Length: 201
Length: 242
Image (cartoon, rainbow over all chains, first blue to last red; front, side, top):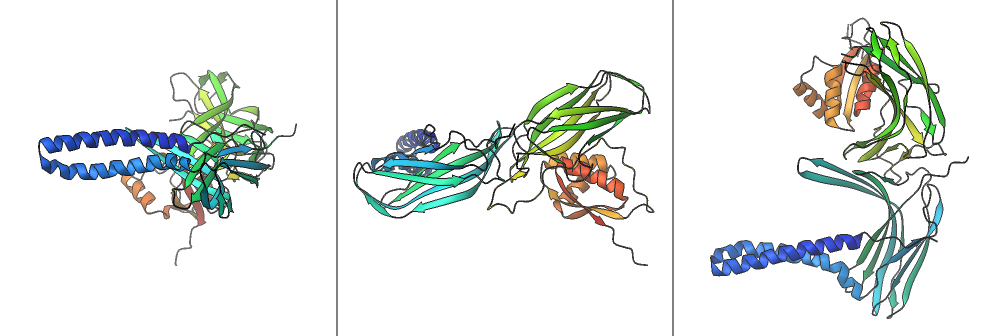
């Protein structure tokens, strides 16, 4: 049994939150300036504020749902699965308060990631391929109840192992999504390493 | 102008056919033949086992092994044959995807004083023990545009095809790698074309690049353009109406 995998969505959400806060501060400054100088500037301030609030909602959403369900803990049965190897994914979450789960999905994804810099522009392209997906049906959970999943998967024998370059990456990812009634969905991603198959000496 | 013709072959596999496939950990052997067209002192003849990325992202390279296999005098017109041997590493395997591809090759660099170093490269496919080349897994099996180039030898200068010898057409189906590299390669292979004409041909792909070429010329041009990232097909030239 290996150590829990690190979440990547939380890092993204923290970044979004920082951007939203900076944007919101800029909007407040713009509003105050518009009120005291030229009220016509409010025409610009309103759409800016709408964008700021949108950012804020996107960044707060992942944290908001944590009031209902704890962050997912994902552990693999082997430290570094190899191409073609069968292994088990353990997923564990706890209900923080009573919840009604509409759907819980675990997805194994292979992702290409390429970054190109031209001058000051940096663009990143990604291509995700869903390899396996498993969906669990609706259920009710009370405070403190644990949602545990065990999912046996296999890395296809003709698939590629993980590759970590500076600008080009091939990642294996486990995605988890819990759809809750009346709340934003909990979504998270966990990148793990897939090693080349073992060479017999 | 390159001062030497470089030919490379693996002991297994044929040149200009699909690149040979080798497994991780396997020992590969081959032969480099350098035929100079001037007397020159070769300071080093580097043979490098290396991979590079191709596709949308910036190019990255990795050197697995590098050996200096020859030092000494090269005489005009006298071919020098030097064998090489490498044990292939475990990873990264060759890979052909939508945005990222990994290409393995054995590259040759002849280090000569006061001249541009002639270079050559011989691509191959590195797989795992199963021997199956890695690709983007299903359900994206449809992405089958080959981005792994075919073997490349430093070419003899391209001669305009003679009508009597010609019998095939070279068709450009598109660009799978960097467009700049393809344009540069096309400029070298078809110097009569302007950059604008080359750009038009790329934009109009699939389009005929060269008509009525000799099969051996067409094959070597196709191999070099494929190595630069072009998707090329050689078709028989349709018979002309009497």
